[in-house]
Length: 499
Image (cartoon, helix red, strand yellow):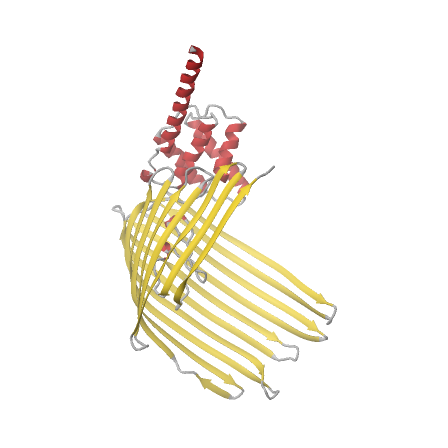
């Protein structure tokens, strides 16, 4: 009787020690973590060549296409005491040449496009966490093409577009990226689970490992395999240097590599930020097309269309962000912003058919626009394999058009986004993804702060940027008016390995 009782006591003591050690690691105060200074820059050049073709015996036709594309991408990330920011710039050139031959009649197409875009978030801080913000997006496009039909009729089209959307702001507060601290916790919990930790790490040691993880994540390498080797070496040095490792065997290195390379990588933040500023806006577009058309009388006439649009806006905005790591497993993020401003829009259009020219009446529009966005994201990340995220949101829009008998339009867009991945066992996993959006007379013409944007709609999608810890997506379709309706999507997936 005494022997089983003794074994039960020993088991209970060992289990309590194990649980206490794990809880000690999980209780590291993520909300108090201060990320070390990081500066990272990358400039990559890519070139692409592709060719395709077809041959159809029945009508003795064939065609060939050749595409040449170049891509120059610049990316920088900074998180220091005086500066937080992400900058991304992309220059793309694309050239297409196509030929076709059908029953001996030849035709060709030629196109040359240039895309240049720049998106950024930059906050320059003083010692009291007051900052000057310089954000925004700019796009410049040149699209051009020429063609020649089988009856030697030529056509051409070209378009030049420019979007300038800077955000100039003042604010107070700082959001700290805490991804690396959670990664350090995951590493230590995994090593502890497999009996490779010599003792329970202190909060200072967890902080030290998190700083190493943060530093090596943003180390520039030109070979990803060499980068991974370097990262594992640095983690091993840190762990063994602190005297935390009991046995540096294959089990230890396998777990270290697994957690670092494949554990969940959900970005998390901690902190509060108030921000307000102005958004000057310029959108210009110039398009023209020359082509031939067949008329009812059998004649072919030459036509051309020219369209020029100009849009100028002046907006003011207020923004509030609150990121909180509630615990090891729970994350809560709240976003609120209000944008109000005035916009002027003008469109001129001219059409020509042979020698006749028709000038369309200019389209002039002047309006006041406002947009209020409220969203909250709650995340549950209990381990390295399971995550659930629920994001309810509501947006209210208002527009007053002075060019349409002072017509008013108020709208709403409300919904939620849900994403989950549940690892039940090595053989059984569940995924659930659901999105729902209800909208009524909603318009998104006002350029609200893109780092807050959360919305779901089949025609346009905003993605939450989670502050400076991810690249931002700042696409915004202008002058979209959604009448009434709703969108939804749902996907439920079960995966089970039978054998």
